[in-house]
Image: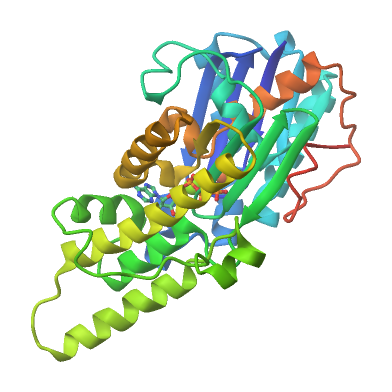
Length: 355
Ligand code: ATP
Ligand code: MG
Ligand code: FE
């Protein structure tokens, strides 16, 4: 089926078009620059930017795909989780489009969308990291971005996704952004820390690995915590400032990055081992991190786990991943969602489609 997907859960206005698993278009407008002086995404600013970007981004996607609106078989949209006001713009746009065109509408879970990104095939799409060919299930999926840090068990993309664990405080990307700020680096902090850390010693400072002590593992085996790490970096920087010596920014950045990457990959591989699932899929903007990728590759190989990482353009928020799940729902014969659903900022991952 030919499906157009709309994504507005955070700061990317994404419109993607797929034909089954074929990626035809992935148009994105980001309001990231508008948030930079606030050091994080401002919900109202994001919602307004979606409103302005929606129509041009839809037009760009249709153009890129070389299809017209009446050729579409269905429309899909992210209905949660995410920022309420931002989600609402996408949901309203998708409803208007579906009603106007008389096409079925599918309301899709954003997190499941991130997994759906891996199904997509297209020119130059699989030059990235990891396995080639069909996504095999079940798989463990680690999704890390500015808004979420989630470990999922995916048995079936349209009917069986389970949340194994998630962050109990900050998301990993949020920690990158906050620590960057602390080190005087601009927003978004992830790419900046990555760049600076390349010249640093990852073992210079031993920062804490959140929720990895035996007592934590009992209750939070697959959960994450990054706010203690952020505080620990802040303390270290404060203490160092008293010495009057210049701050070893590269070493702090490298040691911090190492702590995040270590705990992410350790927990993901623990899930693979415990559940006897020899596959790990990565998604979300933090997957751009050089050390996260490197450590994932090394440790998966050592553990005999197949690693899959979609190309970066499909790891960050986009509409194509939502269209991908929409196409799966159509192919599986699921009923459309109707028009009664609304944006749900805390939608659980078990609700793959909202009706
Ligand atoms: P959502 O949480 O809804 O997916 P988001 O906009 O926060 O939305 P993304 O756009 O996927 O998520 O990712 C942005 C985040 O990824 C930011 O926090 C950014 O700092 C982080 N990031 C980007 N590149 C890197 C990198 N090289 N290393 C670490 N973090 C990175
Ligand atoms: Mg973003
Ligand atoms: Fe996301």
